[in-house]
Length: 114
Length: 112
Image (cartoon, rainbow over all chains, first blue to last red; front, top):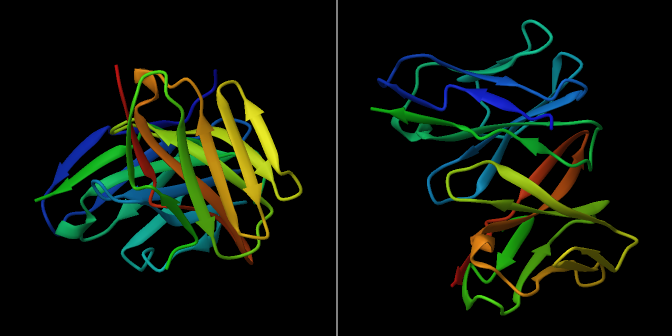
């Protein structure tokens, strides 16, 4: 069964460093998303991406964050100058269609900022 | 407050009992979805109910939707220990782009 894969599963970084989280969405999906879940809290929307551009982003997704689909298969989230409060699980998701479609999630990348 | 809010926040039941979780939302919707998350894992889609549907079944899951009250419920019948997880409702906001917003979730614990 096709699945969304994310790497790394866990990354530890020092405050101020840059981090890149990688995702391989399901191959025939066109819409891609990043969500964040701070330990024990709700799943927060960060950004949606379609046709090589951001279609929607939340107030969390400020200039510190960027997304890219560099090669037609990977979908990356870059976090510049990480802060302690960036420590969270980051989930990538993809969907076939736009809008109210089922989202398929990866298993997440746990980011720990020290 | 939030688009999707579940209650209760936590629910503990015995295996074999039914579990009911509720979700309220604020804006009009095209559909409402329920997802499940095992601890530390990704979310898994369970069921989608469209705004013109009132009830939907999938195996041991039953979802209802009341658009007049802007609420939905998820019923898991004959619960099993393996149903222990967090359950989230999700709605899609159309604000130019689309974003699926999740509620805070209900943590279900099924005791064997």
